Length: 152
Image (tube, rainbow, N blue to C red; front, top):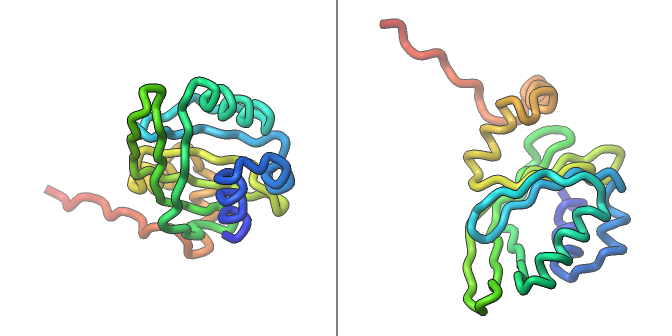
């Protein structure tokens, strides 16, 4: 979890070199913005950095505040927090959102944003992270499996 916390701190400072040291070059990044809207998945550390730079050049200055971090599997961390942005008109807006970070070989190789903590947790049990969810459940991490509905 320290790796993820360090990456969020580096992002807040816009410290690209520290982020590069914490992330794989093949980083997969799916952003979520301060309106709670999901972006398309991007591939590559430089591509993700270019996306952030383009948004900032358009006048969207984003800040992230992590509220909680939770290890939800041997290589997955769930974070819940707030994304705040000041739009091009100067008005600010914010949304409570969630992220799942996947760590591989001591570096972050995937960050996916979600519109809510519930959506992120559902993704761990659904098709977005099927192998990770199975490994996490086998090791005792993650939510309790759902019970089948009572027979009618």
